[in-house]
Image (tube, rainbow, N blue to C red; front, side, top):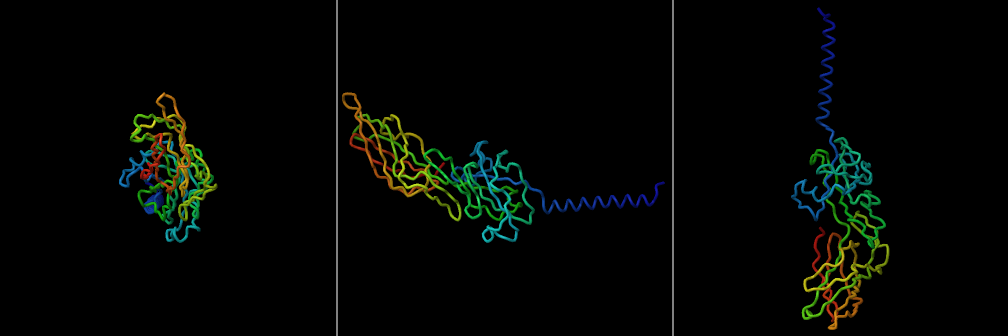
Length: 314
């Protein structure tokens, strides 16, 4: 027969283990470990009622988003105390896994005594800073070549890990606009063949700095006196408008520029006669997130610029 004292000690030890297990289980129940995940959504591409898998389908596995995040005591608010928030994610790259994006390396939510506030951006490599005061910063942007599809989010603030299963939505907002040109012939000149050789936009600013807070703002780094070649080739103008060249990403600005068009029309003898329209005025406010299309109606009598209604960027 076993010693009664041994039985008492064994029972006491078992009770202690069970009690400790209950304490840990109770702690996990009230403050569970939750993996931090993000769901970037391009506002112009995905409906607000789209399912997560639809949102994810808007991107490829190679898309690189970034995020910065700050933690605050749950009794505090981002609006009042953003400047005193503690950094939790410092411009971290997000990597897609399934339908969501995760920090690399992965990270858990902080204790439920804290909230998170986050600002997202894309592409990851393009952002030069992300702070509570200036938000996302794209510095040294040069649109003489393609700067990339620059996007940012407004601050997603005072988020608790119990909300939305620990998934933080990142509604991406475009920082640039797009411009392209189409050409067509003119009624009454059907018997005359016209070929467009080049299209240049002059009087435009191509370089600048962007910051998203306290409100989205571009600061132009050069006077608006630069030139941007949109098309160079040999495009015949027919009555149905034809896209020429590629759409170009442009810094939003008050554009007061001119369009230069070089073209040729075929003479009755079969030769080509060179013609150029210089300094066609183009005055318009270019807004972020808009796609602007200008149709050039070309004939031996000259060129008419026909602006289309801008559309939402896709």
